[in-house]
Length: 96
Image 1: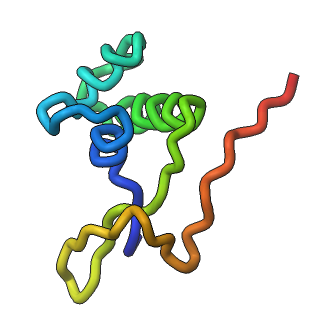
Image 2: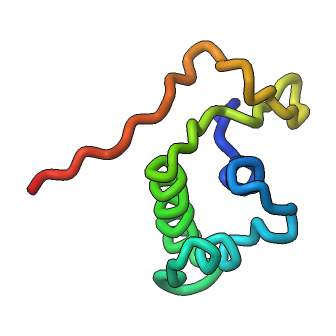
């Protein structure tokens, strides 16, 4: 991946919380959620991050690419500028 959404950064900006409040377990706790699975399991961490992203979308957050790699260097991406090829995320569709 050359560009992505850093959920910690998006969470902090959207909910106006300091960086020390953007650890996975703290973000979940502040959203009234429990950690599901084993801590530090890559799969379980990913599922919990997805739950946070879904909640942020439900709360009206416009998740956008906010980090990228350019020339081997990590770079921040201005949240006011959409990157080409990075469409706005869509809410997941669930079948009843």
